[in-house]
Image 1: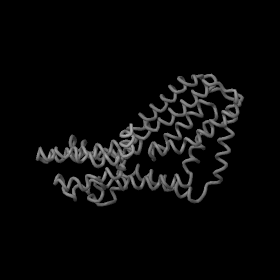
Image 2: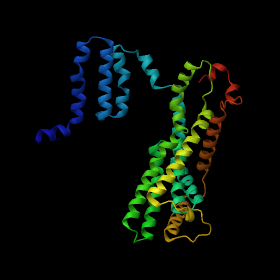
Image 3: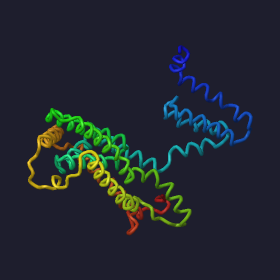
Image 4: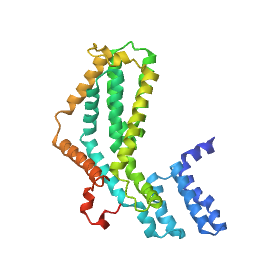
Length: 319
């Protein structure tokens, strides 16, 4: 047991030292470039999966291991770390950072929830749509982290308002919140994955259909948005039926008196929104830049009409 505890404490150090040594016979015995490449990949994969080294460090290992074994030149390896679409991702990250810093995401999320009302079904749809909208531009983890504090505040207020809420309702509420936040993946396809998939998909399209210039932000958005919206709505219906029951009569009934739960939800959402105060100058600038960025993405090369990219020389607008 003492040995096991010792190994557990120093497991990362042992993995870092022993992994390259234990795999070293592979390139020494099989003296080919393929074996050297396999050795490099195995070492990087083990470091990556076990997180013996930070992921950022593991990701940089090919930068010196490939030239070291003569698999690729340093210039070729370095070019793989930074391509043109990385500038797009950097721009999105900078804008996302500004949105988080000035709480614009919180204002958008609360406003959406206020618009849909405090009925449990519509409240859940409001959180799902808010999370979905945020995840179009931010990572899934960031979007969930932004919305979760608001969801928790509403849930806690409901719990206080109904002290005698039964255990079944509580577990159903928690399950609904967790599943709703997981739906970020559905809408990530709208925008974020465009930058990541465009290069690979465009290369394949050009191979199959030479001269095809049909993949752009607008065409990708038109392709993915119906799929994402459909899955989002179906998921909402399924969650309602599974956890809360789908009561069409109460959901669409006008002038219905609010329950204690709904009043508590409405109150906490309004209080959270009031805490933000009037929209500030940095929020306005961030919102304008966000809208401008989206419009520029759509109008760069919409496909059905010439976009603003046609104003530039052809060589400078190659995708």
